[in-house]
Image 1 (cartoon, rainbow, N blue to C red):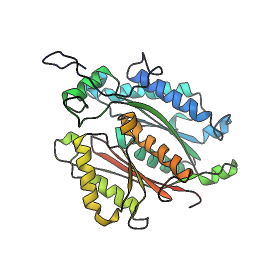
Image 2 (cartoon, helix red, strand yellow):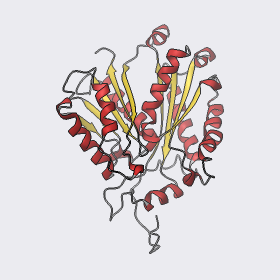
Image 3 (tube, rainbow, N blue to C red):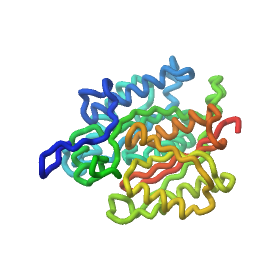
Image 4 (cartoon, one colour):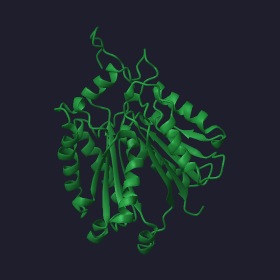
Length: 322
């Protein structure tokens, strides 16, 4: 990065996926990350070599960052259509899966996109007769225009600004299937999605007002209403080093009071940087991994997400044998 006034280089802590996304820009990086995530997912037992009939009863939910006209260098309101034409449609075609176009949806809300996408997918499964949903979430902060934008708002972690985010990138792929469908295929699911709650924070980062955590608190309260109190399990959060996120989480702890016990807070961004729209799916994968191997403090874990434009979400996951 280059400081605007002095034109001196500014060291930035970041986490690019070296050797894999090198040479690709923005949407090109998204496609690279998404295709790699799906390729890896389809190689796993229970997903490889599935027939056309399998995919015809599958929905596709694609989670991306918000449509920012400044980042996409587009005319006002044109970024969303650009994402659809340059990313969503090419991705759908490149996968080569028999997923019908009406069963493809774009969720362009950033961090909380996985919670919203899973909620949308479960609604589809209930109303459209689908048996499963493939959710793909990608993001990359490794882009010159985006980095300049983050720097101009003092959101990056640098030597003279230690409370910023570390830009990262990731591609995540989740397959969510009904228990009945899994049983018919002879697959024993290890993890259940217990509850999903989504909402909106009116005093979000983009509003310029202090985020008091009311929206995220409401989501977590909704999920916790079906769990023993106090909850003292694992929480996977998208905290990234920025002050507004830390303040929001502090307010959430105060609002929830004794409803939350001595929870174990996991912060993936510490190790891979802020992966934006992929952060929720990353949290789900880490929670599922730990729960399935008996590493969780309890039999249920939470994944919480907060987008800078106000969308919030909470997902609870449970071990099937719990």
